[in-house]
Image (tube, rainbow, N blue to C red; front, top):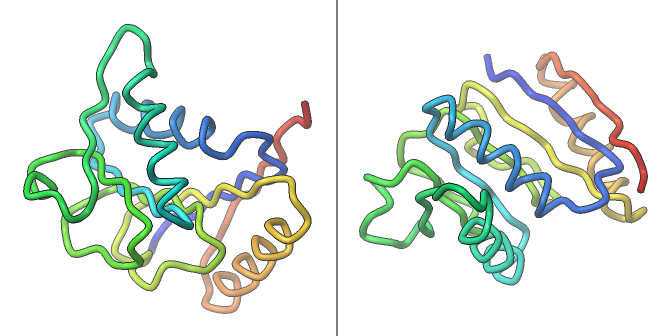
Length: 140
C-alpha cells in the first residue's frame, strides 16, 4: 500500500518539491511530480536547472521521448504510465494513479483554498484505508 506523507502550510511549494526531488534522486529513486498547471511545471523545471548548485537533476516532461529513460518526470498531465517509486503531488485533487507508487508526498501551500483542497485529499485517502503522516511546516 502506498505510503502517504502530507506537508502542510508550505511557504514555497515549488522549492519544497525541488528539495524532495533532490533527496529522492540521491536515494536512487524514480520520481514523478504532478503539478497543477503548465506554469508550475515550468517553474519547477527552471528551479531544477539551478538547484542544487553543485549538481544536476535529470528531468523531463511526460511527453518527452526521453521520459522512459529519465528518473524525474515533471508534468501537469494527470496520467502516468511509466515506472516511478515516488509521487509528489502539487495538484488540488488526488491523482488517479497514486496507488502505483511506493511513496507519495502531498505538498500543501498556505493559501486557504489550497489548504481546503488538501484537507479533502486527506479525507479521500483516509476513507480508502491509507495510513498517512502529517507534518506542518514552519511558517516564514
